[in-house]
Length: 139
Image (tube, rainbow, N blue to C red; front, top):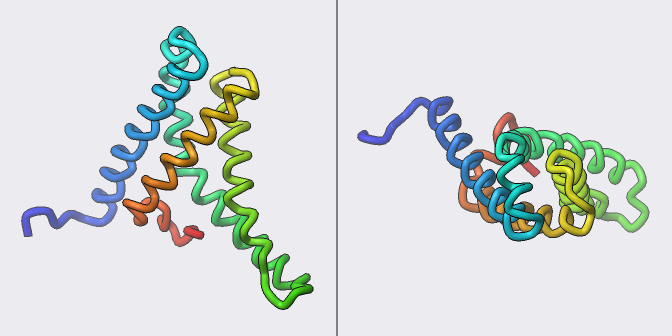
């Protein structure tokens, strides 16, 4: 009875917590991989990027997964649909491009930051699946 909240308030609290955690991971990754000055200069951009990764990226990947599922069902040559397994790769590429252009870092540093962020997002969405299943777009 003590911790019963409205589902909307609970989602917003988890969203804020997840955004703060992803922003912290992004900040530490940029601090270690790129430079201390780059991380300090791009604090606000890192927070916006973390919010995009936590809230908007699952919705985009869910839509991409739905499209790939329909296309894979239309052209299922081997009898099973393996096209939807490309969704995590597309997610990594989106994280890579967004990190590269938002933080304005070279590609080699953006790859490592994207890998760390994707790994942490996987852990976060495994622990809190309600964040990923928001609006029914979970994979």
